[in-house]
Length: 462
Image 1 (cartoon, rainbow, N blue to C red):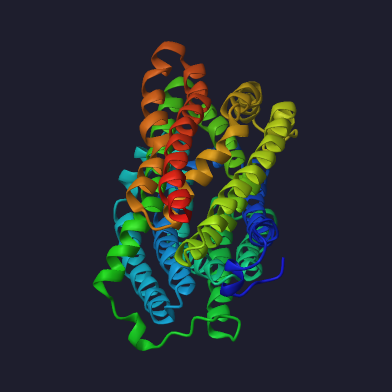
Image 2 (cartoon, rainbow, N blue to C red):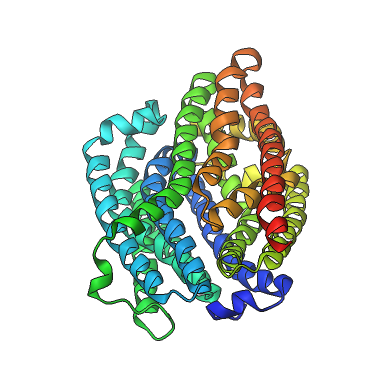
């Protein structure tokens, strides 16, 4: 898990390099995912299953604003990787300075709007009935910490673009550990309920920001920017925006998906059905951490070697990343298929002090979650091709195909499916939309990736 210099991205063996880049990313994503998972288990056991549903309502709003930072980070990091590969250090520095300025401007404005429209946004995302009040408490507090989250997401991608995955991993671990510790103190000891869960999350974001700030101010970073680099540069902003829009569009579609899913499921089964989706949503974040880790490790290697015109290494990186990710996705699939009931049970509290209403809700959730989880993850073994394929176009700076392929699964297939199939198959129609969308998106991505490799990489080698 040692860090590498930017130059080593173009010289070390691909298999070894991908492991060195992906393992820290996977560990970081694992810890962050465990944070979301354990946080939900704590909330479910110490506050109640309705509280899990409340957090699920808030997540798409806060994550969308945080994703603004990630989109600026990934868009800019693609430029930085290619600039370092082409020995254009000044462009890399200017890009990083513009990323910081842009992240601060955009996220502060979005947080202000999010707080102003709080009573409109929460019901729109499914925060109705008993879910509304706890969701509002959680939402207000977490939103104050979202600018720090955005800066963390932006900075983390830049750290990885520098070839420092170990530091990126630590940056992802710090807020997760801090959040879980604060959960115990604020929820279990102080009995602050939803407010405690929200403050724990916000403090975790700030701790992450403090560490990332330390990294860039220390000698560990190769990007030593000055005040002149913070001035916005129109050509760089356009390139950041075109590439970052891919990530932002993906998160926007995710937020729309949460909005639709929470409302559709609320109509089918009330708060308890939203809680089922909340559990499955946590597993979607957690279970695929190794696949997402490989994808994150893939990006700087592909971008650097493409910028250096080492096309054979780019092809090898694509093939190796797909192979590693497919193997890991298959392992995840087996585990989820065998143990869905046991996984669902972790999120549900029990005991003599629980009300009859809570016990009935938990029984409903435990009954409906296993089948839903199996269906949602049914096509998991093949998603590696879709994720790596879409990431490749982003890594090499081709924004339009990256955007279209990123939106293929949820935007072009999944959303239409969940709007149509529940009318014919009720709850089952919601869950079967997941694997159908996965299969269709993978077929489309595989076709375009193969065509692009043949046109750009193989022909360039010849």
